[in-house]
Image: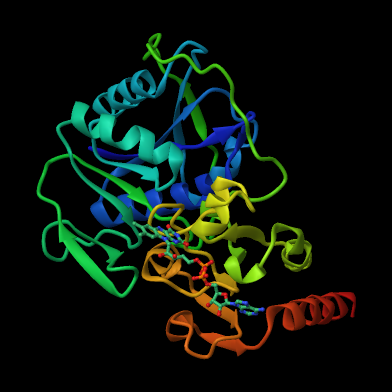
Length: 318
Ligand SMILES: Cc1cc2nc3c(=O)[nH]c(=O)nc-3n(C[C@H](O)[C@H](O)[C@H](O)COP(=O)(O)OP(=O)(O)OC[C@H]3O[C@@H](n4cnc5c(N)ncnc54)[C@H](O)[C@@H]3O)c2cc1C
């Protein structure tokens, strides 16, 4: 029996999430007393980097340009069966969300998405995730022989130990041709994707107009943060839809979330409430976001944000 973790690669290199996933999988395997193995699609130049977390085996699937998520899932399920995996782990992001259900069905597995704790064996197999917009933690018992879970980003901080050599095995399992044809892929380059971001600067309708966004971009740039926005701002086309966070957008868990000119409606909080530190800038002292904030600045954002950026720039220069 083993733990299998899906290693995410893009353009022949590890995605940031893969470090946390490898670390989490090795730790989970140690708790469960099982071996740990990774599975990756295609070549990955820096896969040896995962040896620093104790991951020593990776099954490599040959990519198929005509494959789709269903056939990739079938191949991953095949690897899970070949490895007698009793726990399969994905990242809780668009890749994991598209593969997890199909893999779970093929393995007749129980599933839990968006976990943020290591499993415990004190009382069967239990594992936790946040619920009710991050206001509570639910602990689930999983009873199926095979379990498929996804890990919320930034749930564990990968710590390196003794560097081990990663053995890569070219899997005999093939990714079959799929029925879905991808006509075009458009990727946003340059910034850390929101689910992986540790620092996020987010803004809402308090910005008044899209032309005012440079002050947000400047603050994000000086911090090295990824930008996000509330839903109405994306709906009216002020910002691209991939920046929309919340119940109907991306759910994130950064170390720092700065919310600027956002009221803090429950649907927005649902996606950001698990952030480790929340800073709110809003001119309305009654804005609901202040209740969820660790730090609040009750002031006009057009006054505060440029001053904050200037102070951070000065701090970085010294
Ligand atoms: C089913 C459903 C799903 C939804 N899903 C989401 C979701 O996923 N994500 C999401 O964000 N929303 C979602 N919403 C919408 C949500 O209910 C709110 O309407 C939305 O979050 C409000 O966006 P906002 O805070 O940017 O705008 P507003 O509510 O208009 O708030 C603007 C804030 O800016 C402040 N402000 C204005 N001027 C300034 C200034 N000069 N300086 C400082 N502060 C200022 C105001 O005090 C106010 O608090 C959903 C709604 C529904 C019904």
